Image (cartoon, rainbow, N blue to C red):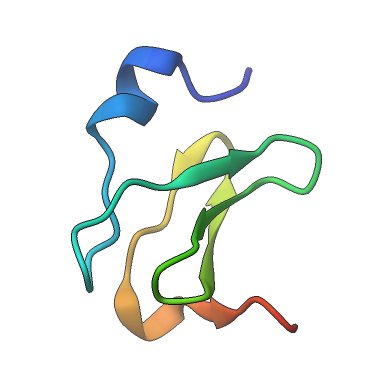
Length: 57
């Protein structure tokens, strides 16, 4: 089940506090401001700054 629109509207990047975009096909959340992505594991966003990966990865 993908992340609901309601939940997605509340989620922000833990580093810059900007909104996140959801890539449902690749199951991660993207912060365009910080140029990082956060994994979504078993429909649960993992919003830990230390676990963020650069968008190039």
